[in-house]
Length: 351
Image 1 (cartoon, one colour):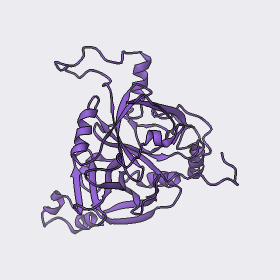
Image 2: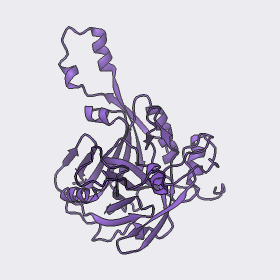
Image 3: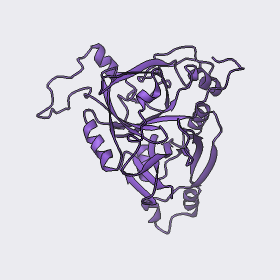
Image 4: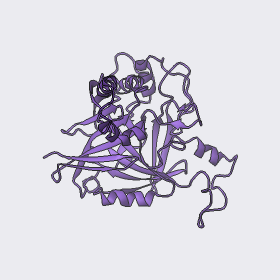
């Protein structure tokens, strides 16, 4: 790790945000975001030969990664007329093991915001965050990678970085280091949870990975930068998640709470409901913590990371994870929202 005389390692720079699509559907997702007014650039295939991507680059040099697995883990059951009769990844093969162990292979989100990355400014970032969290410097390397590390036994949040990369459609080879969070699993089903962001540090020049030319960062919708990210945590995990994000970002959050919006059911409750139950309903509050994030290129509008407990029925259904991404736009409508049962996108005008 860097000596005490070195400049502190910055860990609060937003690098990119990941939108996951069902296997083999990247083209339709590209069209969906194009229809929303984004200038979508073709990316390429990742070095693991499991996923392909496309990019939406903003003038702040933060980008949105549209990503999909190239093939499902198994053919659909029952099979469709055009589905292959055998799995693309044969049982017991190294390819299948890699697909099964991928960071996003078993998440409950089939389509939507799945993850985000902060910019790695030093390959020792994992030790810095682990020390902030109080889990030691995490010298157990874990298994690393976008598949996630199994992590150190000392309670650290992150495993050591591993190299990754992809080949662009022009054949250019890009290389980077990913610092992954320690993988956790559900008690039931052993489904990997994407709980914390990863860090991405460039080995080849960042402009190769993020070609932010004037043409590439100009969008029909006049999008300029990310205004906010909203990450959901349950009531039970809010405090622990808050501690983790504070260690990751390196600054304390601003805290707030507000009455949770009443559901239609609660609004139509019989007037004979007991006073105790009514007061209990009123006392429920939605918790929120907020941090300011930096961008690779400074912009004056600001980007905020919100950590919230669920407010609405859709958020309750989503439960945990990255739920909403908002964008600053130049001119146009004051506010626009696209919301499905899986994700939310919003736009705010700077004028």
